Image 1 (cartoon, rainbow, N blue to C red):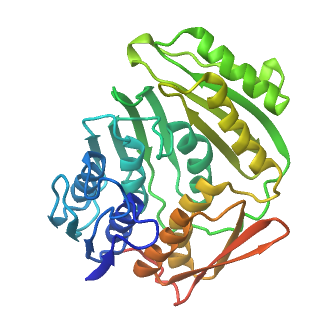
Image 2 (image 1 turned 45 degrees about the vertical axis):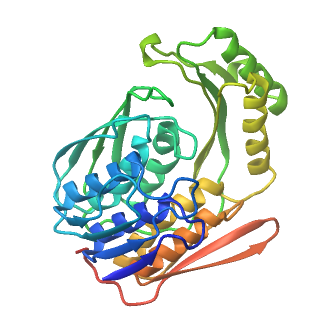
Length: 353
């Protein structure tokens, strides 16, 4: 039984999700205490409970403490089962986080899995659907784990109601870790504004401000098509496509925040990425660690990537991964970027449990 203190590092929900994902992949049970102790409302909120229940469903786990506001959890996994699954958060809580929780285990299953997920698709503090589709999923495909994602309906806080379909294909023994130390040549960059049920002027102002701030042409600024019944919400996205990687930067509109403020936040993040030559931005640097570590567990060896920043969220994630896998992370800063190296410390197992 692996014992994990949920108050360490950044003390958030990623400790829970990484533990669930790797427990399913390795067959190792864990006990987690002080869940989300670093948050204003500690314990399992509805979206975290949805992750626990989804993980338990996928692997037939025995679970103690799976209830709202619980600050401790014991998770004993069974065998991962490919299949057709429906997971609904039931609120505007992020269904993309539920998807990321079960994705690693299902990509190691022996058959394809088809998922229907409901909840928030574009939430602050969670990867938006388009980040998963354009930035995260292509890297997993290069690793050898293909997935197809489709956005059926946008879901914003507080209404929720978003819908995502996902097909996760089995990777088998094809996982091949690789170095990702440069972006490659620039292919394209563009911005989109999703603003269902809001005046069109909101989208125009955000895009105009972003275009001015980044020097982008009108052809790079797009008002995304939305259905009015998707409820009110606002997300401004900037997508940067390179030969080796794509990055997606997002800011969300909210009451009392002007369209210009939303745009300036995206401009700030894009500029911070552009001034550095590293391959990955701060969020992708965090989320790429787990699938890369799984590949190294299977194949052995060392793989590296460069990033613009290592957040406390990322370093905490490294620590949790190291509790489950014989993989160790190290980092070094040079020439304005950070190089992360992941090394399998034991001979590869050649198979997943």
